[in-house]
Length: 292
Ligand SMILES: O=C(O)C(=O)C[C@]1(C(=O)O)C=C[C@@H](O)C=C1
Image 1: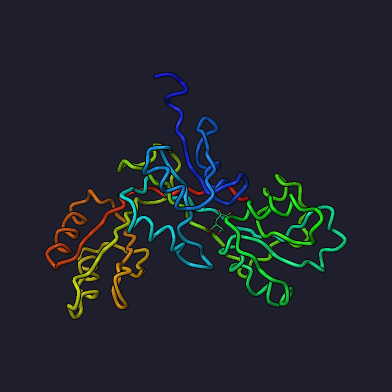
Image 2 (image 1 turned 120 degrees about the vertical axis):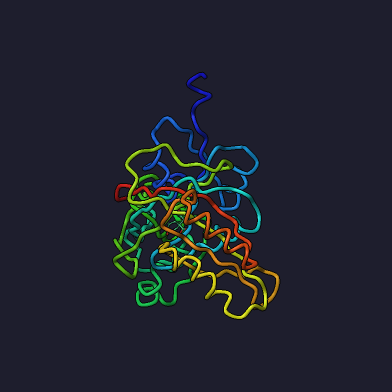
């Protein structure tokens, strides 16, 4: 196999310098080809359609919770697997065009990804309560927009790399409302497996998407007991709408175990006997990226 053929193509939520870009770059070596996409569904579809080998997409933030678009898309639209998970520290800064530095107290609009705006909700409320907030496709796309409009007195919220990349001035640092701000990213693939990257953290994790039988009283309790008596540790369980009617949900469960373990196989069998449907996203390891 030639050098070129063995290089992986990896989709990420772009443009360059987004948090997803930094997570992707922190995980893979410089040999891989990183391809920016404008939205999370476009990243996921690129894997599904075989345009790329892998995609890196945000899945959960410590302040804002689940990135519902990612989870819903993986449940409803595609059959892909998670082959790795990346954890990144998130620091949000307010940045303006260098032509507007003297004027930044009078900004007339703040642009960023909805999750980034939400992470700075208190800051924006107390500091710029009358300034319109504009949702943008990513923090780096917002930084690029501000860079392209030196004539406008607008700001972006994003990381220090995007300020550097798009030549903006950071006018206020660390404006996220709570100090502990981390985001989890999934690395998704068409093939079930694990990244062959060393230096992962801790134990393997498995994500199941579970649909309960309808109108069975105590169904959730039964599901939890399937894991509990086997001493299988859940690090997360959350419901999402099935989109078939009010009160219809599926559950996302992260279990700290390998799906090949006999206890996990037994758990899946028992869930099926209880009338549940289990969609496994596979077993994967967690990686930490250096601070941005
Ligand atoms: O906009 C970006 O830079 C992204 O990579 C997206 C995203 C997200 O979807 O949560 C990633 C990390 C931060 O939590 C804020 C935004």
